[in-house]
Image (cartoon, rainbow, N blue to C red; front, side, top):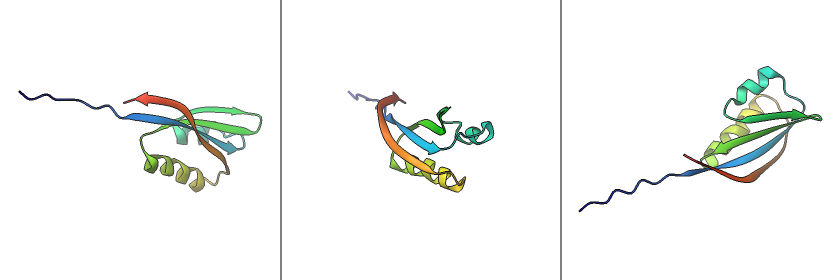
Length: 80
């Protein structure tokens, strides 16, 4: 008898704060994120499956010339 177990990896959700209120056009660069803009700061809530995915988002922020203020895990996970 063979038992197949399907494992679901969960993605951690990170909150990333960027200086400034991003325009709609810049927000579209983060279509994988929930974006909140207020009081001179843009907050991105982004699911990341691993450290490489998180580094990719941070690299995208730097490539766009944005100032990264903070990165922290939100404590939420998403089942994939």
